[in-house]
Image (cartoon, rainbow over all chains, first blue to last red; front, side, top):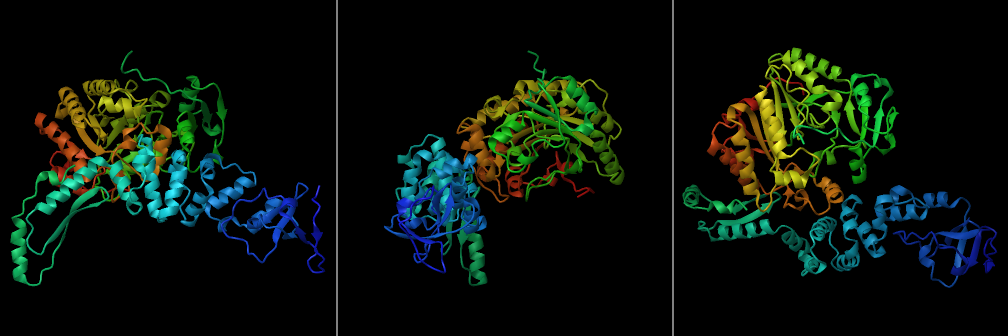
Length: 262
Length: 371
């Protein structure tokens, strides 16, 4: 049974333009699309299961009165036309599919995340694949949401942080241990917590490099690139004599074996 | 229990392609009553092909499909980007394994929710015939344990005996049966030309128990190796992947000790070393399938130049050096080499590139081969 509408707009050109209150409409298909519906446009609705059902303009749910444009067609088709899959962000698309009755299957945990976090992750264009660690971080979802919305990490930082948090949680670390002390260095701090042996070893190596008797003008430091630690040496040589001096000075440097091995 | 007794696989589902219903393998499998029902199917689970969930992967170990393989069987070992190549070739006679190692690379490789055994081994042997004629001077080493364990399903296929027969007539080539089982009974008493290497992937028993589920114990593998050796077969060992734990030195010291006590360098064709490695995309599969309880996941691994996660290069070098020096302390002639490691690791460990390491240089000489 269709709701009784407050007033049917009397327009020759738009016979399906109605006026209604939010309570007279079915808002069940609000999947929180990312892009807001233009304020100037009427809410779009279709007749679905005898109810005038909103398909666009969900953000007007709390208005007192609404203009509603009733359009023809089955709900799923209209929503498919309004929100082409290829134009939706990953989690946005997942929400739409779920609301239209398609089970998210193994991705259900993503739709149980706070909506603010879902929207943030979509905005950062993080792929669903990279969000898999969140399956193990349900208990920390609110804390993660708060921290992400506060410090707004980049997409690659998000991936790194989630992966590290997942490893740490699976190894029985608590949120208190993992929470950011300094939001800008959250990823680095988690890396150190996750990899204590390497961290200790890199600190030791850095110390040994720093203490080595480098020739004047040589800047040397221990650096890590993926699975390899090594010494980066920076030096400027302006003439052949300096170059010869540098070579002989470098030959005198002795570095302990333990520098290279964790 | 006899340590060489290897159990038949337990299957939930068994499918046979209609075209191979009467093949030798299908007849044998049908006679073994491995599953409650046998289904004839052209391509089971076609709709589930693609990226597998962890459940799909686990189930695939208990769903067996017998069918012909339509493509090539023989190909060069893909190795890894930037690694020293040891001229290894593979002959794939199936895909998937009924054992369950936490670090298994198949978790990132397989996209079919079924284990498959290819029933047309005669086509594979015909391909080998052709290659041996086309490259008469290339002493290929051909392994059958890349996408499936060489021997775990041997009671179903009896392929070991067929391969042994073929290689008996091609003594210049070498075949490698590579396994974590102890299933040597179907071929060990057969006549051979000494060019079938029976190789065992081994790890300290503590690692076997924790990470290599459903495999033969270390003592059973070593016993099988002894029986093979005593029957004139060259044997080989792959200490791969070495896994770091707090007591890794003791674990690998004991392992070297067990191998070197029972096998002299002349018994051993090669000993390869590798350290834990896998692509980052496999991490989630490990989490889902083994939880937080596996050293494969809990280890400190970092992205290497070839895109795989590995231990720190310094740690890997230390682990390799340790094992090599323990072998050398016992006998300098043990032919140890590194598997899928970049030149930096070789130089760190041997101070030479592989072609300059006397005991194994012949494995790394370039040879004419199909691409």
